[in-house]
Image (tube, rainbow, N blue to C red; front, side, top):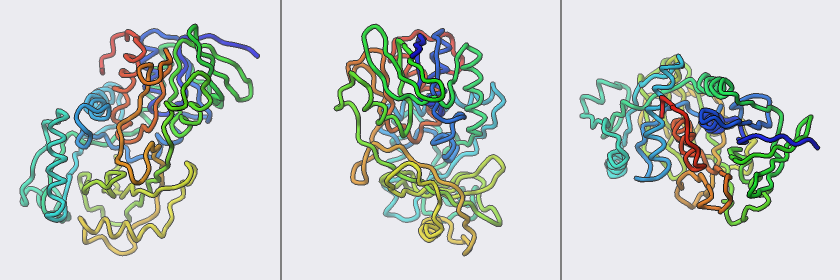
Length: 378
């Protein structure tokens, strides 16, 4: 079998793999992305809310908090420079009764701990002025929250990567990794199987990350977390659009609650909910779930008409925890975690992964000890 030799191999051409590969190519590394499908961002990265998060919810000092806050501003700057549609439309974080108020205050305190200084407490009159249709007992407004054309963003990352000499090998699954001090070897499948030797290997395979890690010779199995799948369903709204901003209720144990999001055309949809499933290929939205959506949405928008919700799309969160466990931090495991030089495994990269992606690219480059070329966005 033929063997190629490059500086770095990134596995997975979702938003995370593209951003990491961009950072490595900016540092002058000859980098190849292996992607098992025939296009970029076709799995998890294409099935989300397209929200740019402010960094409100995450524990102080966590990877999520640090990369979300840094990544947010980097992402807005990147979109402006590249002509990508992104709007700071803002969101209202709301509680619908007094029992939820402590949770709302805790989120506001967390935001401050994370360096988010622009969260605004709203009076009842200010809430009514911003969103007349909204029913709540208290709210904060996050002006830094926004929405983005995620596909255009991923295309721009691909363009940067390729302009710096990077290559994406589509329809080329990574089958196994053999680690070694002199250089790791990635066995690739597809129409023309090949082995690729690289000093650095980044497993950013999303739902396939654990499986690939289990086929990494030289990696301790104790370094591989468990794997669960939490489906997020979305319903779009027919008829009159009620909101001008994103509306977020109090989060639930596995997600941020059934919120109202807007796309760049101003159309409203609701979701995602949390539906624990057994695999990553259950992507149909069951109309029967509409009943729980009506109940959830009417807590903050009682005027939601019967028959107004239409099944839209679904995505699967790559979970590394079960229903009984609180949401953990991102797992971006380097040599300090698994003792294998030059290998990075990414596990459980769900929300706010899109927002944090540029910052995570820089984070991975730093873990590898790569001195990056000047990046105006990070």
